[in-house]
Amino acid sequence: MSKVQMLDASVDTEDISDIRILVDHKYVRYLTGRWNTAHISSDPSTGTPYFASATNKTLPAVTELWHPLFIEFLGFQMGKKLRSNVHEATCSQLNGKVVIKLAEFHWEMQWLNQETQAYQWIKDLNVGPKFLAHLTEEGRVIGFAMEHIQDARHAEPIDITLRQQALQRLHGSGIKHGDVNKHNILIRDDRATLIDFDNAARNQEASVLDAELNSLEAVLADQSGRGGIIVGTVDDSDL
Image 1: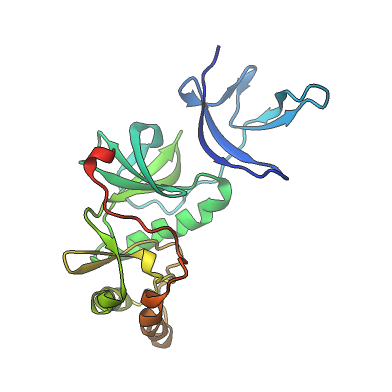
Image 2: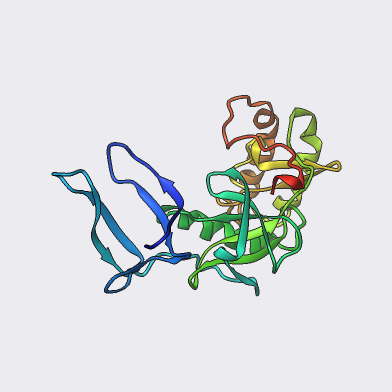
């Protein structure tokens, strides 16, 4: 009997749900050949789920490829989930704990592609985590691995100067971050690190960059929770 392992699920009780699965520790295969996409339906008389169809499609992938290292997703040991598609992880090809970000479903690919490109723009600016590798799934690129910023916390109003300094370094290259909510600012050792560059844009006019810089005080004071969950310091034993 085959062993089925669910990697990710996006469940809708009223419409179609999406899941990613492994069969026997491998990406899915069909009885009559190779497949990577299937539709699971419910038998109207018994309610038993069954594969109504299975096909082998060309799945979307990150195309902005610039880093020399590519690592298969199944080579990572998953740790704490930080957000829906962001995890702490370890891998034999990388030193220590890292953070991986991946497109779990096809509609997320556009954002991962944009963010991968943005990391190439900022690789020498020292404003974000180090980009460590492209993340692959049977050859196609679905995300990336980046530096884990240890002992960091999210920015607070008292960190306005540190945040301004980081954003000014980014703006000095004409790049707009695009989402400066406080959950996208990590503070460690009196230094701010920016994360989540999926809305970044370069070659921006000075007025656009100034508007983003001037929004910082209000952003850091925001208590709405916009931008994601708060991630606290995590001990290595949690992996």
